[in-house]
Length: 186
Image (cartoon, rainbow, N blue to C red):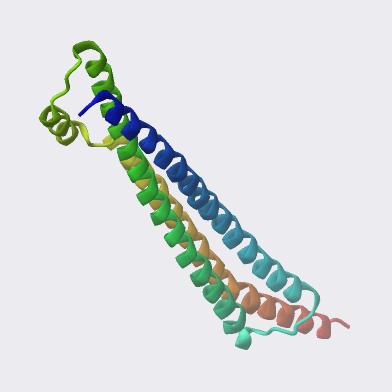
């Protein structure tokens, strides 16, 4: 390859990397927004249940499935969107890492072409196959962060689903005890 071809490939890869970085940021931001949205929506459901049980008894223990289903449905919708954003983030970040490695290889080829004035095509291809592996630690760190986020969201949802039933049913039993205690007073 000639020096001009290497420089053109380097510049094209730089432009591709800019677009790829925008995609990575978009999917990262999307995953973060969906995570916060899940937490806020579940907190609103929890607050509406706990507020309802302390002020009025419009939702009783026999209707515990209504907030349960609402919580589960909203979590499912948000969670699958979150999974899509997280996997897209991981995939685009992986390809961006590969592009950075290719760009480093091209830079090395440009540097060697300037000094020796000849570049063998086979050497660059061999070098790509040997070096074209992103940092394994970074990949594992990303996988761990995504997996841990998924675990925390699922655990939070399990707590919310248990709360949907226990808050309503425990509040009804506490209300019945208070009413029976007041009726036994002289």
